[in-house]
Image (cartoon, rainbow, N blue to C red):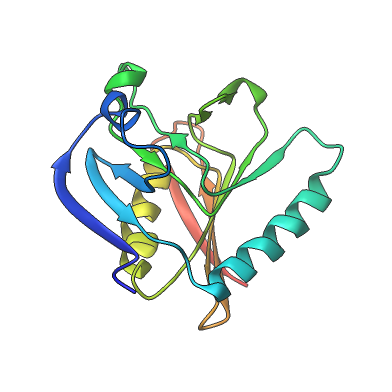
Length: 172
């Protein structure tokens, strides 16, 4: 099996992303296209277990859990949706604000994102996506590493003046 997450030296917008062939799994991060391949069996097992646990917990509540592939469009302030250059497909997304949901997925930051690390995605999940989710104000970001059996939880800390907006790390 090839690399699970490989950057292609092509930039595109959400408008162009929508014209990709159906079934093609890619993410856009700052306009760069990242190809994705089918996850491993362990990855899928962890994803299904977490999805079941969160779905059961959220049953009857406002928040809903969505499993990949599920588009999350992160749009910069002042940017039109078709100009957006960041569309990710987190392993799990939890959204509490129904107004962010539409037929295409989620427009704006989910309340919580969970990424399950594989060896080929580690630098993306631990660095690139951590910074991305912090920038777009995702309230909670979990990185689940099934090989090391570690879950790192990042919670967004917001101060009164919003100047110290950052993630706080907690291992569980």
